[in-house]
Image (cartoon, rainbow, N blue to C red; front, top):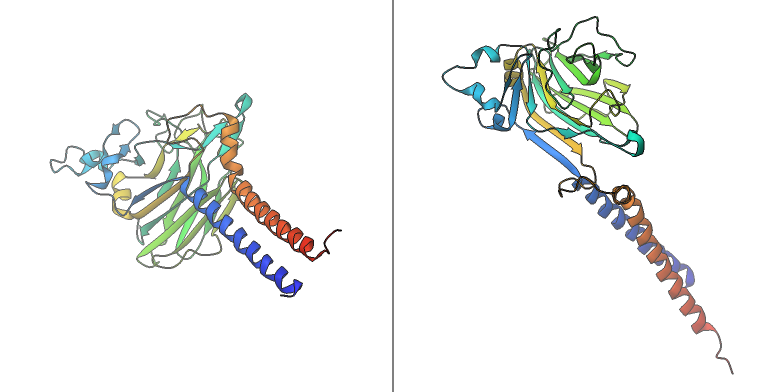
Length: 312
C-alpha cells in the first residue's frame, strides 16, 4: 500500500478516536447536572414544592389543593412556588472568593392571557416579613440592581435582582419577569439560560410548540456568585397571586450544573479533586489522542526498520 494511503487511513482513525473521546467526555459532562421536571402544578406534583408568602410558608404546597379550602386565602396572596430543596449556585475557593459557579437553563410555558409570572433565584432562606412585601420597596437601591428589559410580539421580559429581602440586602439573586401579550397565541414558551463561564443571561420566547429561537429576546451580563447571593438558592416562581403560577405555568424544566463531589455525601472534597472533573473532558481527549499518535508512531518506526537492509 502506498505510504500516502496508509497515512490517510491512519489520520481517519485518529479523527474517529478524537470524536469518540469528545462523545465520551460530553456524556460525562451531561451526567453532572441536576434536573427537575413539572408538566403541571397539581395536588401530586406539588408534594415536593413549597408555597410561601411574606408571612407564611406552606410545606408541602400540595396542601393548596385540599378540598376543605383551608389555604384558599394563601392561593390568592402574592407569593412564591419554590423547590423544597435549594440548588447550588456557587462554591468558594481560598479566601472565600467564588471559584466554581453553576450554569443553568430552564424553560416553561405560559398561558397567552396569563398574569405576569417571574422565574426567581433567591437566597437560601425565605424572605419573610419584609417591610416592602415580596416585591420590596421601590426605593431599595444598589449599584448592582440595574434591570434589563426587552419586548416582542409574544411577551415582554424584565430581568433584574430580587428585592424581597429588604434594604439590608436590596439586590440579590435573579428575577426574570415575563408578561405575555394578551393578543398573542394561546400559549408562550420561555427559555431562561445562564452561562456561568461567560457571566451572561439570555431569555428566548416562542409560541408553544415552536423550536427554541436562535436569537435571544434579551441578552445581558450577569454574575450570580458573590456576596449578593448565597452559595445555595431557593428556585421557583413568583406572582401577584400563587394561583397565577399554578394556573398559568406548564411544562417547567430546570437543569442546573452539579459541582464535582455532589451526591456522594462528600462536601469537603479537596480542590485538587474538584479540579480533576473540570479538566477531565480535555484531559481524556488529549490522552486518547496521545495514545493513538504514539501507536501510529510506533507502527511507522516498525515499518521503517523493516525496510532497512539487515546489518552484517
